[in-house]
Length: 85
Image (cartoon, rainbow, N blue to C red):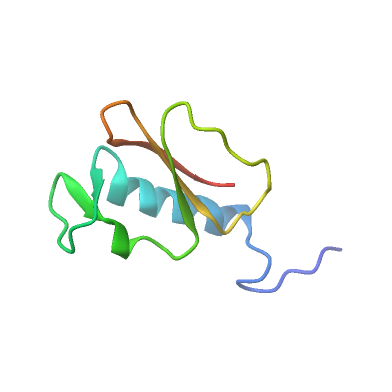
């Protein structure tokens, strides 16, 4: 039987709910260095500490870190997809 400790071994349910939460917050917005967010942008300072921004065509490491938020941008700089990998 696997050991399940809250917040230590994230389950797919908590991961998918976090992904849905961040998708709702970011999808279609641009990331900005400005401290204020609006309907079209999101302040980078409000992202979780463990995140990376993935631009189109960027090379990525293959390390698996389920606590890291990956923010995938489109060609126009808007958020197209988020995941935890």
